[in-house]
Image: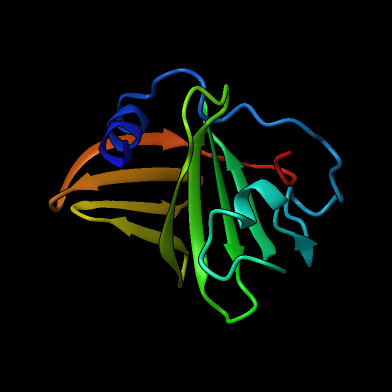
Length: 135
């Protein structure tokens, strides 16, 4: 399922980034010290009490970054329309964004774009827009 989600992310399949909610805090689409949505925190190892770090939207996907109470950062990617369960992967903050890995796939968020690599070769790129926490 993770491979399909990654392949779909790369192809830009419709549906991964349609999130509900628009309670902007007026801070460039970022949310400060917000709680990671329960449904996403439940998918993270040690996710109870996780904090929302950043949420993004692409054309059809939702990307949510949450930090657990133990300090681990996770990237959760899902189709906006909920057509299938999302996937959580360990992530790290870089000097200019975020990076997550899932097997041979790597997702790099920087400069308003998420770039997807498979075995070191770029296979996709989508614009990302910061947004409030997904529902």
